[in-house]
Image (cartoon, each protein chain N blue to C red):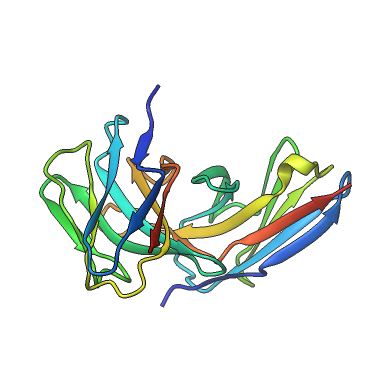
Length: 113
Length: 111
């Protein structure tokens, strides 16, 4: 079955880069996503990558996809205290016209001065 | 502004009571979803609906019920059969792979 794994915590110093890692098991995944959740709020889509891509860059965010190893990473450059949140990795594929994502457990990113 | 509204933000339930969580969207999305979030466990799918008057069980549907009488609305009832209902509940809607939108959640506590 589908499974998405990610580490639960990451602590970084303000100004450093953060790298959050994720592994997934379903090789037929079409889309891979990173969502951000701030305390007491819902999830917001940060960025995504199609399964036929290796890398995507969007301002401070860089997503790397290694399909062979089924490994996805999110790099946040120049991490700020406002980046402190829970980051969820997710995958989805087309199934009868639906795209229900499977989420990891989330990585809590703590940014300290 | 288009979006998803969940209400109430906080809800308290007594033992043996049914409670209903509201989820309304004005994004014209066909599909709607309910998730449960527990600390360290990520999001688990409770129910989802891809069209009006139709819905399917997710991974943890026991003790929950839903209805989808209108496109805009997908209420979730937490019944007394749900033995451990204290959690953060998230509603979402989508019109495709890149249009998955979440509400701001309801925190349910059993007292």
